[in-house]
Length: 564
Image (cartoon, rainbow, N blue to C red):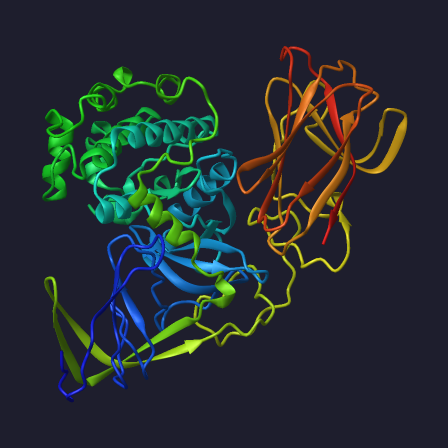
């Protein structure tokens, strides 16, 4: 396959273990660029074009930021109606997904106010099947938020690359997303933009991302002038008609998403947005090709009347009456291979960021023939590898203009809503020395939810302790650990002065997942020893085990020590 200089491009098929086939070219000394998912060799370097669904990291453009909020930006992950999403890395090699909001939205004061409220609400969401919001800066020059990065393809990528899921997998998918919606709604959040690209597939289950954030753009000039935020094929009729949304809108979207997962197409067809929205509001869904065992479930979710749709808890009970982890084979083998390929991606510290430059004076047309015709237009340029230099992270405001701005040494006010990362520890520190980034603030009887100070547990006084009063509601506190610690050790028990010593449960939650749960009662303290390596967000959740009218149960963590 010669190019215009006579060099030969030799296609070769490679099949790594558990990874879909990819096409590879050796382009000799030709200079090329990266275009979408296509990439070609530079100076003999082998670069690949992935098959559909194969993971790839899109290089950064010249205008892309090199750090945001102290996090190193290393690649693009995608873009949506609200902004561009980047893969970011912490100094100790963990991965985050950072969404930087579009300038035209950032310039709207009403959007910023809504965005700040929605971030605060999203940070209250705790679920096994969501990607937790771990950091944000709604007040920056370009607002942004960071979530835990889930290495896996989106549902849209999986279906595009491997075809529709079998009914068994769809049932597991819907049950897990229903659990995520239950937890999202319990925090007072409505997703509003649930769609296949906002569901990421992981070995232990799907993760719902971008929950609640779409609401921030509802009343901006963009949406008022007809540029909507959301995906028409997955909007509920009430959204299509401009009416108020309730949690039932997310259930409708779940039904549309389930149909897509099972068939690979939309229940309301394609075409102009206005035509799709009209069909959603006024026509019955076209469920042709839907497996019989899924049709009743999907039909109920797609009811026009929100009152006739099932609640997420009902779907959970119907699809998975015995709760527990999803089976390891919940996805079909081809999709699990895609998931495994994402899991094998290198950590951000080893992924070079790429700057793309274009030489407009020359173009190269590459045409290849094999099993089918493959053609793509390559602009001749130079790919430069830029490896992060390991300099200290910038200030919380973030550097959105490239790599030249020096980092600020100005401290961030303690307890800010953005969740300022703790310094990389040189020695052990008590958890009480860190400012929480999120916590419950309601009173429990005559006690505040969270108090740092001395407490006596089983006759022993701990000068450094965290005490939480619990009653009818679970109490939550979170810390940002984005510079990394090794272990959390503490004595856990009920405070001796608890007026109503009902047994209680204390949970340690890491990046949205419960990693340790202990039930404690008066006179029987326990030793807590938890591995917290790799965590970005550390949470403490406390709740009583008995009747909720027994208020003023006080759970205490004595000397909670974080070790490097």
